[in-house]
Every structure is written in structure tokens, then in C-alpha cells.
Length: 300
Image 1 (tube, helix red, strand yellow):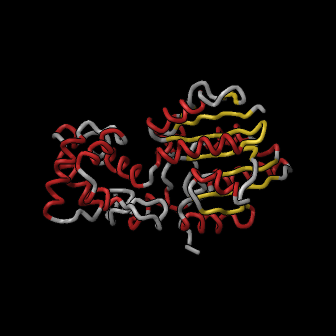
Image 2 (image 1 turned 90 degrees about the horizontal axis):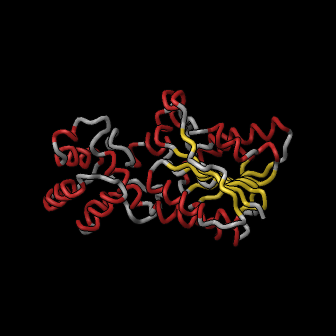
């Protein structure tokens, strides 16, 4: 297994709020569909243990390296499954999951992935254009940037990244890839920085932020996974069971909001408005800045 470092032990976002909705102290079956480094699960297990509650906890993640590190941290207190949370129904059909009293989906990228240059998620560290949450899948950021038709690439950057300068960015990418393959995160980030107007180069966020987010979402089919995952998770809830979803992007949050509203009379939405991090949490954990939490309970 991979040796953990302090940077790997990220701070879970909206931890207290997540646990207030899941209530692991009541006991039962719980599923963390996006286990990552296991921060939420570790705290949930501790809360159940403190209450003397018996729980069975499943941890699912697409990334086998994250699962290895989570297992080092959590040991045999968790039953581990590699897979996309969109495949909850398939995992249940194979007997790998069971009806749950609580399900968590944290749709953010893990600190481990962001902090590992070889994974290519962040322009803050130079690395190959990869961005795959599952390193065994075929599509990479390099293939998206260098081979997708430019009109498709513009659609991704404009719609997924909500990037107002998508056309200028894609034009720069198109010119660059005529000359050579765009291979690294720093190379792409510099192309983007040069492509946007002067005022956009010096804003509070790096000008490549939205484009990197959009390409990552396309590589991992994240919106499609969210839609399928919500359907499967709602079906997997036991009566009284609660589904909690953390989003970090407005498109995902709108999708969750719409799907919760369409769930029907068997379900009660527990968050009229999404919960967000307090100023104190944002100061101590910048990753929580864009987080939104929504929760729903199955009644029957």
C-alpha cells in the first residue's frame, strides 16, 4: 500500500453538518460513495462507536490508490469497493452492497488527487495532462485537449466551466496543437493565461481554473455520474434513510436540486436551501469555499 503523508489527511468539508444528517449513532448500514481519504467515514465511525451503535460501513471510490490509503487509515472497520458511485445499482445487484440507512456522495476532487502532480488535476504543480479519477479508464485530459473537435471542446469549457472566454481559449488550444501535442498542466495553463484578456489574467482566481474544472468533468463524465448516482442512491435507501450530497459546482448543485424535487412523495427534502460552510471553516479549509450540502430522506 502507498505510504500516507500529512497532506493526504485532508480536512473533510462540512463534517458536522454531514454527520447531523447521517446520524451514524443510530446504527445501521452506511455507504460513503466517494470515500477519498476517508475523513467523513472516519468521523462517522467514531461517532457511532462513541454512542455504542453497531454500524456496517461501505467505502466506494473510483481511485484504487485512494482506496489503498483509506484502508491504511481505517482498517477493517470499512468494507471497500472500487467503482463509480453511479454504479451503486450494479454493485447491489452483484451482492456487493445492501440497503442503506445513510449514503454520502462528496462530489469534490480529493486532496490526494490535487496534491499529486502525476495525476494532472492541478495547474499549481506541473504534471501530465491526465485528470482521470480512475487511472484505468481510457480518456485523459491530454486526449480531450488534443483530439476532440474544437467546437465540442468549446462547448465543454463554456458550459461545464461557465467560462466566458471559452472561444478565445479554444482558439489558442487549436493553434498550439497544430504545432505539437499539449502534454502538461503548466503548458495548458500558460496557453489559457495568454489567451484571456488582460483584466482576466489578474483576477482573484487563476485564469485556467474554470477550464481545468471543465476538462476534468468531461474526462470523468461527472455530470452523467451524478445523475445516475442519485437515481441509484435514492433506490438504495431504506425507509428513514438519508442521502447527503456535497457539491462544489453550480451545475452539479442545480442537478441535485432538480432531482431531489422530482423524487416524489416517498421522500422529504431536508434542506430547503443548501447548507454552506461558515466563514470560520472557509478560513481554515479553503476547499469548503464553494461547497453546498443538500439532504433528502426516504419516508417509505
